[in-house]
Structure formats: C-alpha cells, structure tokens
Length: 125
Image 1 (cartoon, rainbow, N blue to C red):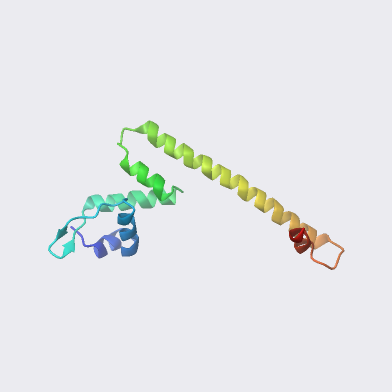
Image 2 (cartoon, one colour):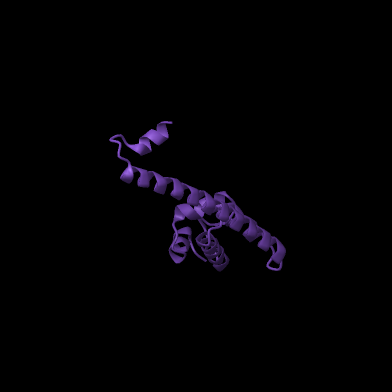
C-alpha cells in the first residue's frame, strides 16, 4: 500500500499527474483509510500502462478506451491502434506539407534578387 507521494516516486510521475488521471477516470480514486488514500501494485501497473501507451503516441482518451477493454478483445484493441495510426499518418502528411512550404520560402529568400523579403511578400498576398 502506497500513499500518492510514494506512488508518484515509484512510477517516476508526479502527484498532480496522478490526480489528473483520477479526475479523468484513468485511475480509480481509492477509498480513504483513516486520513490517507492508499494505492496498490495494480495502480502502479496502470500508471506504467498509461506511460507506455503515451510514449507510443496514444492520446489519453485512447488509453482510457484500452484500459476498459478485456485482455482478449484483440479486435477492438486493433481498431483503436489502427485509428491512431491513421491520425498519425495524416499529421505526418500535414507536417510534410509545412516543411515543403517553409523550404520553398527559404530557397526564395536565399535566391531572390529583390531587396524586400519574399517570405513576407508571400504571406501578405
């Protein structure tokens, strides 16, 4: 049994993060025993699950969805991961477009014979 401070240390997180996870329903709020709430090994495992999922690029809403699933619900887990991967791929395309535009502006800025900035001219049009 661990206090919230000890739980934070054991999971390399902080108390505020744990409380936030409780507010949004990722972690259950334990019933107080005396004047403290005590956490269990299961809470440590849940926080590690959340951390690994976040490190893999999942959003908290997706993590919440995964936490609610049964270990044998492979199809639903696969759907959640496929959906996230689609979102990441769309974002990569968007970032690639941004990169292309910025690179183009830099090239114009380097090669333009005009004294005025071609980047600002392009943005003002």
